[in-house]
Length: 140
Image 1 (cartoon, rainbow, N blue to C red):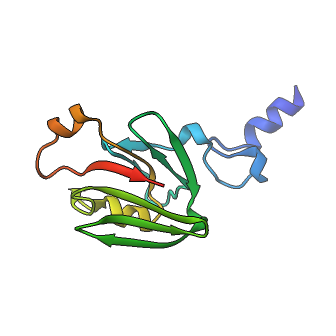
Image 2: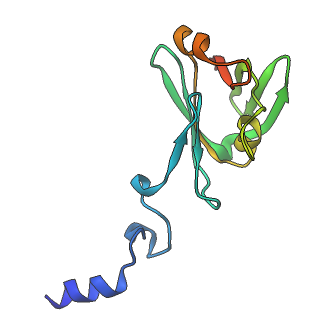
């Protein structure tokens, strides 16, 4: 009984006990906005540890942000992530266009705010309006 009372008053909600009591939200408490082709971390101080690259065929690879040596954006070529073992290319349209105030894919990637990116299937691509960010291909 005493242990439960002590725990009730000493462990804060949202604190990961495995992290020595530091205020790190548990994985299921982090809010991510689904913007169709990418996920944006809502919390102003939230940073993703890795980025999931999701292909339309179901293949997924996750890359830790600390392994990315260089982020490069060329509007005609797309986004290139340089890694020690090679490169990842994200191709599409409006890859650095503002989806909503202060939310841009490339800029969010450089600030570790993007937790995943997703290739669009042909239906999603056709349904997107001209100003939407759409990912046509992810190559690794």
